[in-house]
Length: 146
Image 1: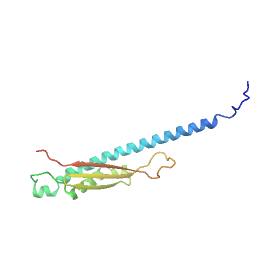
Image 2: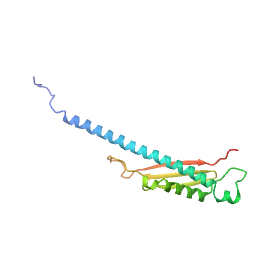
Image 3: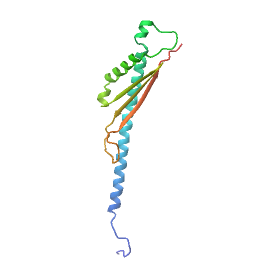
Image 4: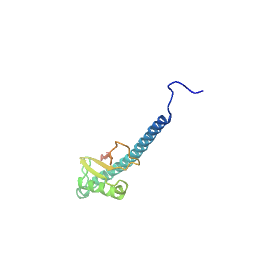
């Protein structure tokens, strides 16, 4: 029997709308996962660079020239920055994260390394930034045990 009421039409537009929503959700999940993994790699780089900078910065030329003081170690700014740059170069940070920038701050016995890098997301979502960036901060403290 045919329906004589107002139930005319096609389910195709509804199905297409659901498919579009599902594809959009898949794209968001894929891009979010890619950004998360890139951020994890940048976190590891920032932590490693901070540890290297603290280690080599605290053992800088002042420690060899003057010996270790009785108090806490301090981090030599120049040696720490050189150690961070060398670490990032040695691990191939610029190859893995093209356009990476590093800012190194030394505050007494603490070194803070801020890394920022653009990421290439696998899918381009409408309304998303064309060249998104991720940022990570790693820090290390030099505190010798007595």
